[in-house]
Image (tube, rainbow, N blue to C red; front, side, top):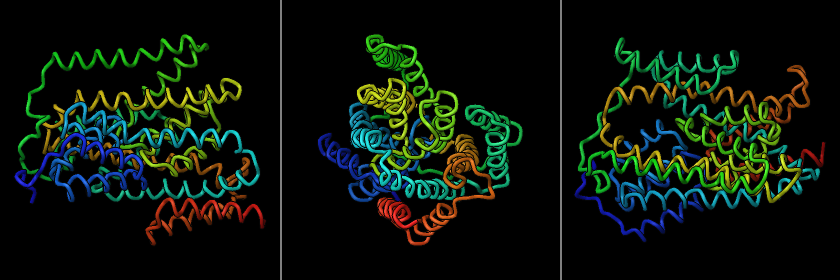
Length: 429
């Protein structure tokens, strides 16, 4: 049982060293990121209690933004206030951003070389397997009652067959949770009781309107400043669309990166024409090879948007990547700093715990849609029907699933195997 008397508060420099290290070693997806933070913050250093860590994690699922990065900001804020949250959030993202920038440049320069194409052809089935496994894990943890299964099925039908917007599905789920709370409270499973603890130093003060408005004003200024730069770059309408779109995605990333990626993939490919479906899959593959949150794949989308829109300009692609990263992650900091004091007071609230569970259940159906959407071009290449699948790709999806699930293969090791598979397939067949 956690006791606050056993906890210690690190110095800012000591915490800074950990956040810097985390940015470079945070492979393995959201689960891996959370495991590393829990092992260091809770088990080894005892900087944060187990109950408070779980409370922060649960509520980072409902706050818009990628869970692991939100959790880094949240825990940094718990220990050292706003400067701790800023340091934790930035150091968690910047390494993966710079690595992905380098990989994106190499991709557009050498991606059409046959052996490079073969490498990506090997990676794509593995990416499908990774997404499938993520769906299975989320389903296992979130589908506990018939209501959960029903919501997952409705979400899938809505987005796959009826083409309902992702925002409508999330909004509908939250409305259902609200109505169920008042009309049929027994439908909402409640979260486990969480032990009462002493508040952390950052949470002892009550919510105040003036600091909140000051923070809101600062956020608006920080959001508007890049648009002044875009006025100098030319084609303001493109940069405005990019800024508004990725700001919007930041506010609808509820329950982890996989909740918003189907929306981004379909909208940027079919509506905005910033990149192709296969390029989107390649972006997933590149993002899996970098540390940091999977949502960093949006930075690749921004790079390809700038690169393609401006006729193959690496400079504009780089600006697109930087702008996308900025607009995607800026709201995460603002939401944590503005919302965390209020969220801390909801600790153990059964209605909120139940609503969180329903949102996560709906996400399962959304991720299944993402798998089918991206898997279409991998398993049914060149528009061929279901009677002419790519059996080699299908086989590698199954092998990848077995390696990940049965043998707990490290994702980076699977990436290496998939590259080798793609090269051998290219050379021998």
